[in-house]
Amino acid sequence: MPIVDRIMRYAKGPQGRKMRAKAERYARDPRMRAKARGLLAKFRGGGRRH
Image (cartoon, rainbow, N blue to C red):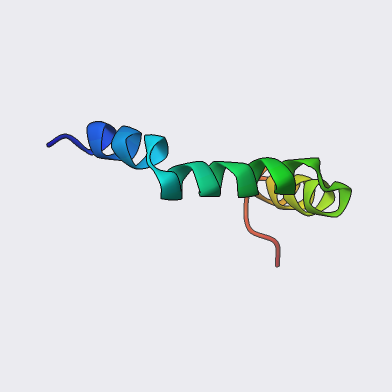
């Protein structure tokens, strides 16, 4: 079974729906959004910092 099919089956199941709801709740939380923005900025920053 291809990995994408397995992911889709999981996402449609009860556990997948719970995880999606949790992710949506985190996405609405301003503190979590700021944390995510900081991580993205860190990764987009490019090379290593000495």
